[in-house]
Length: 431
Figure 1: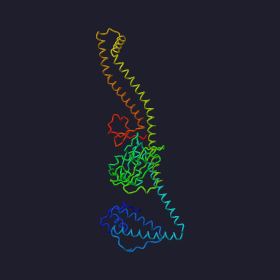
Figure 2: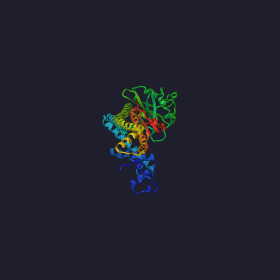
Figure 3: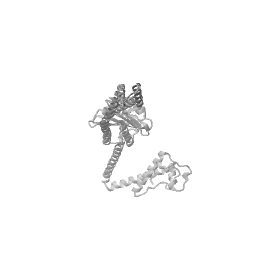
Figure 4: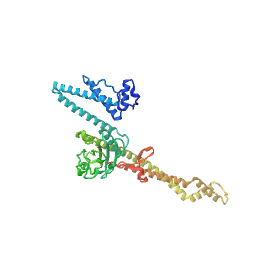
């Protein structure tokens, strides 16, 4: 079983006295702080790998030294690792002397290893971006989800997302790698100011990213309008520009790190590829979502409007019949009384016509014609409401508006004029 840093539970002093060596080792590691447990497990893995490769074992100064706690264990493992490094260095030096081409081979191996690590990381980023979110999502949700992936893969401490909409930059989302509260400076959007280094690069259609290693103010040679990010503990910034095929920027994704020059570990061509991949996947998902919604809206408009037109025509015909009946109620009653008196031979009592007219009125009341007209009017009103919703569905292709629904779900708001702004969230698709 592979030993992991988080698989060792915290040990009590009594557990450290266990007799089984494996169990005792686990208990000792478990008694160490979290950071030390990680260091010990990494050392164990490194030592095991070296022992499998090297033809000889290191000679320790105190091979019989007893390990009783995590401090002595860490010291012993460090000493073993140091001796192994000496053996490995001497072995490599011997190979260099025996084979002059070994240096070139070692260099090529190092280059291949670096290329493999870069390709592996790029594949992980591609996989995460492509498989993120299968449901319809707004532009803001797509960008936020992609930023979460880039933050995880590139080991940053904070991401900030912006979208360009109708000539303005909109603050979309920000989050830290550990889920803690985001610093207040992300709301200021200083990087959207025209003379900010980030915005100057955005204006260049060929720029894909920019790394800023100095977040001090410009008066101190920095690449920030003020020192707020620096005062918050951040030391460098990596900005990706999301561009359309014509070079127009539609989004901005910034990663911050608290380590100085942290993003310099990534090569320029790798970061350029990352920017292209993010632009392509985010842009493609935006287009796909817009295309799916456009087709759904078009289909609903075609079928729904036809069905609603038929329903509305039928309801209006019923209303016309009811209105005509009520407008000519007396004439209809007179005609029916006359027909009844012709069909049934007399003599009729003098009050018979009045009695039949009264009975006709009672029958009309029991039919509740006016109440039924109210029901039909309600049907017509809701048909018009549904037609408005279909029209708003077509508008939502370019400007989706979400509202909170039951179960924490967000759905398209097809009646935005009827809801308060705090009941809904507006996410504009990029133009």
